Image (tube, rainbow, N blue to C red; front, side, top):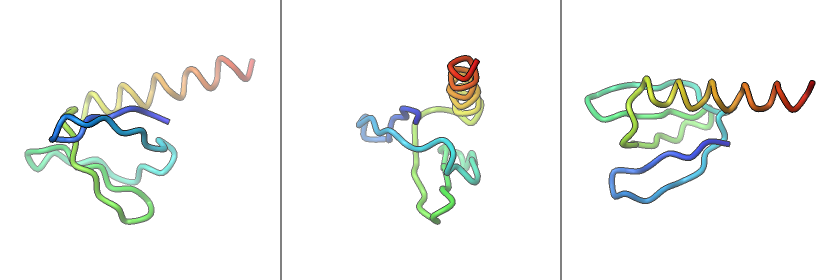
Length: 63
């Protein structure tokens, strides 16, 4: 699960495993595998970094 910030400054937690697509339009839009779209303040690169960090934490815990 990762934390992102909506345009209204509210923070939400989303399941990183359900992210299908991330677009900059110019706002960052995260499309989930369910079809739900979430517009967030973070950049595409920020989201990628957050997801990579999240997955690294999971792998470390599996060792």
